[in-house]
Length: 236
Image (cartoon, rainbow, N blue to C red):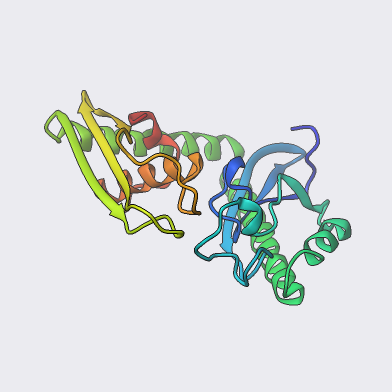
């Protein structure tokens, strides 16, 4: 964490590093309070174009992620509050409408930095210790909320099956099967008997699989449940 300083913003859109698909760009910014790194602010936004074989980057018939657009690993887009011109120039050289996409990225950066200021204002108002206690309470509250709901579901194995028409190239329907085993206030989820990885671009990276399970769980149990890592302790 020593390489972070106030005003930094890290950008990433790589599905294999925790992203979704390439048009969904994630920003992360450190929150400092009186010189101490105390939190991070993160957001995600869908953008118009990040290169690739077709405008918008999403199309059937693609067989490699390189055809979908520019992959951005975790790099600093802003350093100490200032945009890194080398990063923005690299992005601009690989997309169709840089004047629009870069302005959208800058707007997202402004939103991220505003979030940092809001967290700092919250800490200034209530104190760092209270902020940390409340953060821990939110984690515990959301975890317990999911635990209680799972205990009300009859223990056993639940299975659901659906199909995609094909993989965007052709061939057989793509089977998606989810198996949920409820036991002792927890659940185990697997996708056994789901079709193997396809040639077309309908495969789901690990981060999207985890996110899909998480939001389905929270949405089915209580959509008002705080969005925290707490419920993740109740399933694997």
